Image 1 (tube, one colour):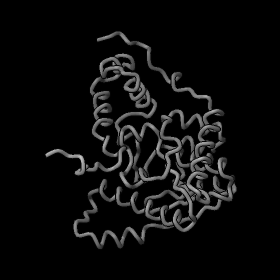
Image 2 (cartoon, rainbow, N blue to C red):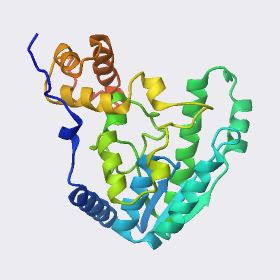
Image 3 (tube, rainbow, N blue to C red):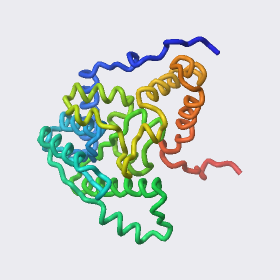
Image 4 (tube, helix red, strand yellow):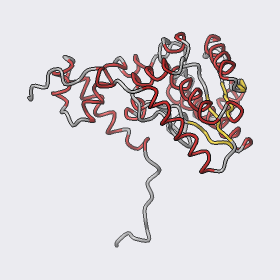
Length: 274
């Protein structure tokens, strides 16, 4: 095993936040202009990533061309999340609509023969896909582009719902690790109450990203950075003084979730031999 001690540290994830914010804002502006659409729609949960995307989108397009949506589920979404979204939208002067999705979900539960309330993952994915249906309705009605809110850590590990929160027209922050999104949030003056929240997809009570993933985001970011730099599982584990099994599981997550990051495969019959 190569002695790679101290190759990885959070200092390596430090970014020029002002320059990064300008690059992302320019990217959003250019993509909306190229599309010929009127503006953008952002699904905002009250968490870090979607708050950053909303702020960057408003900066890029002007608040009048941005529509925020928050889609709470009864008995699941904390009232504080709805309040945080509303306050952030007001601070950015962005119109925000609240769409209560619980009635829609209950109809779907009753209509699906296989529905099993104990299967939290399938039900949670259904929730995420229901939200994106609403987002795209708004996008169609307002002739707007859908902004994705996934970060690089989630994107690589597949910690998102395929055709749910993983569906978007563009992904402005998907090349920033979670730690870097947090840096950007402070530059954008996102409220500390939002920055300091326990990260969660909000799909069932008590859900926590880090508990589900089995690792803190700062550690996961560095594991993924080591992989990006071509380090072996043993080298990363040695450098970070963590269990090799944890690194192996995260490397495996990246590989097995490749299907979530690419368009559907097409069998090219016109070129297939035989």
